Length: 342
Image (cartoon, one colour):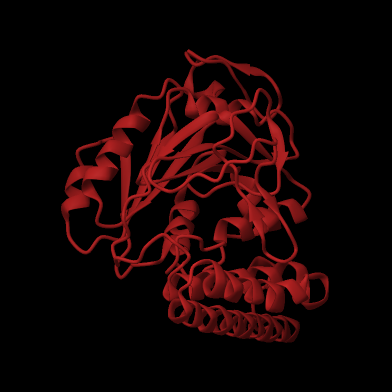
């Protein structure tokens, strides 16, 4: 059994009683992937460090996933009707009922390796550590791995450096964690709030995890990357048939809509690097398709999707700000909830 440390730094042996362990809730969101969720649960149940509970939120259009999950008595099943492309809503639903001190997230196509949960928990050795994530080995998606120990960086123009496949000999601090292998203290959600439901989930890069991590750090917490906590991410094909490549107009629209929304919400209209966000990367995109890929038609379609996505993203920010202003006004009048709790 592996040794772990709780938030107070006291040692916890893998064989100790439940009351002496750091209690962890593991949340998995799934839709129409019964075979994968079964593999995912089988890998999870082989962990030496057992979670307090495993919660599966199912948005499937049939009952196959429910039939699989109910074969695991230790797993709690939640069904979300009309849940297609509602990853954030599904996670928030599970978080609201989770009982663990730490809440960990994996995807239904993420297979945890031996010691995964123990390594995550062991990194919570200080009160200001709000979240811990681990290494992600993508088996289908192309890996763009940097040799330098740069992992999980976020920039004010919305650019991100992932590099989560990198293996390190030490635990390092990062700006963000990856959604298919991340964990947070439950108290973080009580202080920061839930995942933002306004992110569009059409693309594989929705930015909702980047957004949440950014808010966590703004509240004074640190985020850590422990490369010993490993998942193998199978990157299963999307149900809607859209490719995972950004070189598709629909995917391009969703990515830049979310990226624009993320930047303006978290860095503001003044603090963000707006010239690059709204101009430079559009020019770079046009150059790549016209002169590198020799595909002017697709280049034009992606250019339109890029610009339109940014416009819609900016509108979504204005709508959010207007809604928050109305909530504050209602609260001041005494007929609404505290806007800080929304």
